[in-house]
Amino acid sequence: MSGFMERLFGSGAAGGRPSGTAGGSLPNDLRVEPGEPLSDGELPDCAVLVLNLDGKHHLDRCFNSLADSNYPRQKLSAVLVENGSSDGSGAHMRKHHSWVKLIENETNVGFSAGCNQAAAAAEQAEVLVFLNNDMRVEADFLRELVAPVVRGECAATTGRMLSWDGKLMNSAGGGMNFHGIGIQRGYGDELRPEYDLPRLSLFACGGAMAMDAGLFHKLGGFDEEFFAYYEDVDLGWRTWVAGHTIQYAPRAICYHHHSSTSARLPKEMIRLLQVRNPLLACVKNYDDENLRRTLPAILALATRRMFLSSGLDDDSPFRIEDAATRRAGTVARLWDRARSGSGGTIPIERIAAADLIGINDLLGRWEHWMKRRAEVQSVRARDDHEIFKLFLKPLWCVEGEPAYGELQTGLEQLLGLDEIFADLTTITGQPHL
Image 1 (tube, rainbow, N blue to C red):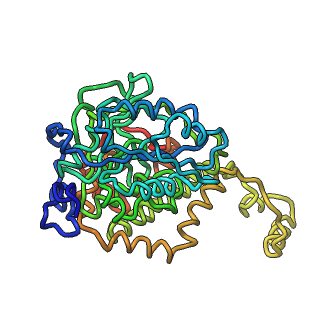
Image 2: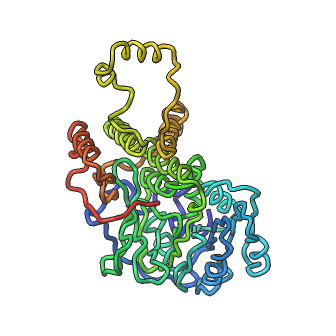
Image 3: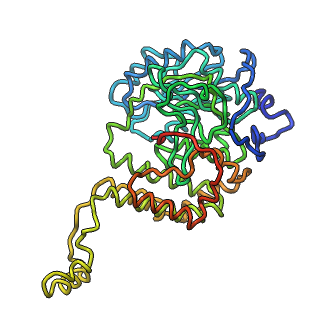
């Protein structure tokens, strides 16, 4: 066992133990007491892991800020995974940031796999820091981000993410609603005192997070089947299920440029991931009782959202009631056409088709995902109802369409979801995209 792990878990904890308040009751307000700063000698070997796809214009600002960090240089390393860029990012890194270990992939392997690849390359690191390429960090960002992990208060942390000009919040921790739509606490808010306080968080945003390296690997890292989006929500949720904790570290300040790589991709590709991955996270991480209660509502609401984006309406040619009012023989001809399968096709919006494919990625591979779920549940060390406190806004309704709101309210009452999530903290947030 390394010296760092001995400091964190104690020399008698062979294989480690859950960090933080494993299995214990969490405070209702989720606040935690701030710890003392660490000396240079107490800081662990830290690897900063960055993924890049055609982001050469971001790299100088990101790595220059890391180079200017006050983290002990002999304990700091960095890895950039070049994920199939065509803008010369790799050559730029070799010329201007040669201290960074460079891994070059021929194609885009996805955020999850790319981050896992970087983590595997950071062999000596005791703490892993995942950072978006469109970030710049304060000089003490790394010290403050890793400190709660080193003090044994938690297994992972998420930093205070500000807009590029530092005037607005981007993230002060994360939560979600009951069907897995992630929330960035504080997104778009002014810099209020409440965001100065450390607290527990459901997940650490993958763009600014630190995690104990041993635990990251033990839990399997980011789920590579997610490819991108919500892999951090899933990892955070799994971390809590396994009995560990995650904190928001407000003194670890970074600035986010918000120049999205995904903006260059077709919307339906992003939509598929954003529909499928929250669904997969829920199937993996709810316990048996709560999955039975939530999954019918999750699937029903996903179906309604798919219909709303389909371009179809209720005045469709499929309704026999409408056909019955037409001239004689129409119903018979429609019936014959339906039986013969010669009805042809109708247009449907690509977004709705992406929704259907995303849902079928679960339903069409049910046995596979039940095995993946069993892996998570086999190490469960914390009750769901403790984790529910971290959702922040479990009954948040994501659509303003009246029938959708009516459906969600009805499902909450029918399935008892309003009872499951009664009296839990609600915090204003924005979708985690």
